[in-house]
Length: 66
Image (cartoon, rainbow, N blue to C red):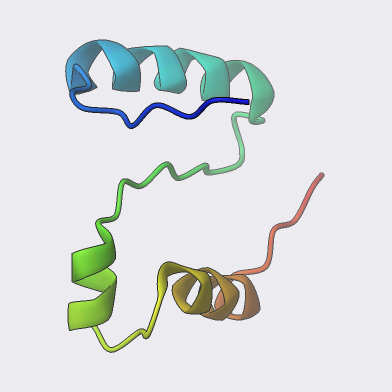
């Protein structure tokens, strides 16, 4: 397997595609959130790593499938 870093993303196109895909999978009575977060911002907020932030987020707002 070979990984290539993402250098540039067109957020208008990308977020539009994500919005359409989420809209097909989320009930209209529910809310879905897609958030782009920089690791630097997480560390500035006091989290030691992105993994620590993800764990804290999961505890605070657990995923609920309906």
